[in-house]
Image 1 (cartoon, chains in turn green, orange):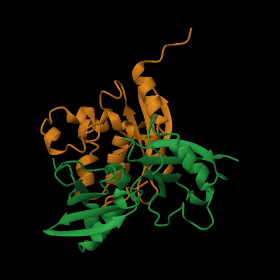
Image 2 (cartoon, chains in turn green, purple):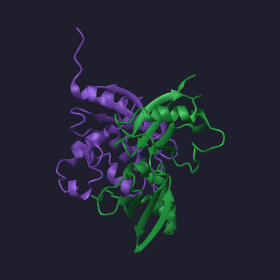
Image 3 (tube, chains in turn brown, blue):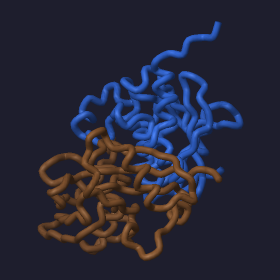
Image 4 (spheres, chains in turn yellow, green):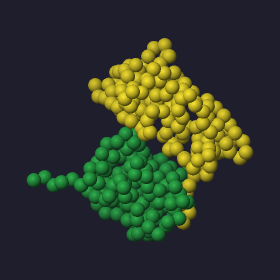
Length: 168
Length: 156
């Protein structure tokens, strides 16, 4: 059985990490493998595992899925976080929209949600990015929102701003 | 006696095995072809599946930004201007075959193009080379441009 690449993000990491695991491994096995990536001494008791851009709670699912069921052809991507959800506010044009997302939700998906909330067309959404309020930090589209907050602060606010484009 | 591998080549090879690079490859955004030091050859994909191969000179990696342009793997030469990706204004400005004779992309993360563009450091902080992100940063910028809604595939 070939191994599956699992990409892990967490409030405890500054960058994405990689672990390889058998495709037939259970979600519990996957969580153990992900926990092994934590810095020594990290309290892992309250950490929950969530799957990227998936609204299902994998640990509470009635019949645990296997790693191979999570592989949609582009690797398995999960997140370890103490917050079950992150409350996200997005400001644009004098309005603020708010929603609760799982920690494994990508910035790219939140941008799509925000753009739709503000009535943008797909092309216009692509020309905007999320910038952390009060900073000039624009997280990558693949960054999980959970990587940007630390428990017990389970909320974050972004501004939706025009993307940088070279104009000469 | 085996030739010694330089620290910058070792750094590049480690970066090509990093989670960030492999993640982008697994997402289908790019694929590794080969290292022919100091060059790395990586294909970046447009939405229609067309692959544009970059040849990046990585001397000094990662402290010094890479530089490079589109490459014809079959001909082992710079990609002919007629085959460069074309589209709207954003792409036309970044992908200019006449800029540095096609040896560099007109991007703040390209070390040759940054020369003489000091204002880019403050104008485009997100696009300036970031050693911690590695080669994936350059690839992400190119991939992002190729995804623009104004992209029109060049003649193959």
